[in-house]
Length: 180
Length: 118
Image (cartoon, rainbow over all chains, first blue to last red; front, side, top):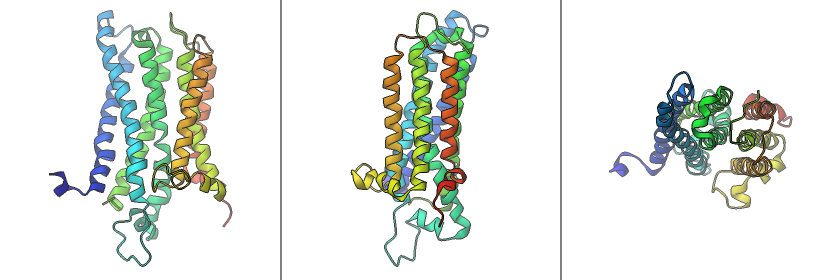
């Protein structure tokens, strides 16, 4: 069914950008709300016990999805993006990087957008993994420690910002020169 | 900041935070070094040199080395601090500085400053 809708390249680009990207956003929203609301004054001990597994799953899923996103992006989709066209190729539609660089107006999307996206995205799994580890390590004890939760919120948000930059430029670049 | 969790030392958590920032910094450093030197850029092409990531180019070496730095520093600090309470505030400040540098060095207008003059 999918083979009639997408090429293999398009399917992987959708998995990388849309499927995993959406999961990442969902997990971030859940994790952020979980971390923020895990406070003594907001929840009873029963509430802490009920919320902690959800927070644990939310942050763990975000970390796993962050890794899957950068791994599929870098090692599966990116080689198709940067493939060099054979000499004399006129139609560059199958070679996104070359297509973007062929026009001064679209070159920005590679020279700035892709150059930033392909690198900064990799900070997201590092940060998200550290957050997930700390949530697993401390579990319900986090409720008593506002300072630690603030640290986690900062790291969690930085991971989201890095992924956000990558996702935003990914969308613009795909619009200008899709991997097909 | 003196974040400590009762019954559990904060060393392992501090190690995770510091390792994430070290990974990010090494990534930024590799990006900038690859921009500054063709030899380093060629060395970082792990796809060509070691067959790791066909067609990925120098990005393969940058992310593999950054990930290795993340994992190894986590193992190292995690082992040394496994039963210790450390000054988490100091570790966090160091981590934020490394992260800021890492982010800055992956930003094209900054790392392109290190490109050799054409």
